[in-house]
Length: 184
Image (cartoon, rainbow, N blue to C red; front, side, top):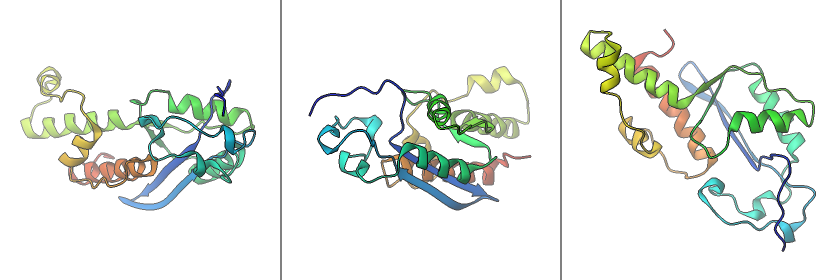
């Protein structure tokens, strides 16, 4: 087929997990069809950004509009926890895609990276019995792979795809909350 570049941002997979009281209570995961292109156009390089996504998974998948409507219903007014270390800005892409269909995503947003950093600062404060931020900052970890952080907190990571990461991040938040009590 020929190469096609989308002018507008798009989403080809949505994976989200809902946590309530330290438990995963629900999951919304879907691929998103690219309706205007037939099977002959759905061929792309498998790069890390497309973990687990192959063109055939997009065939027959819900339209972007339908997938975003269901996502909006699923998340309602909850706080979203997103990754900032992706090669694109996930929240901006979500908002731009939603705007095309009159769907607004104005949820409160936290970054998973920030939650991990705050948890580590809280742990250091409690360990040292001190709140000297400069001393604590000097002990902070260098950026590392998420899989290393999952290992450190004994979070199972079995699926190297969007849903696998969503589940692992949810478990990481649960683990951090159990050890640090993030919400108080």
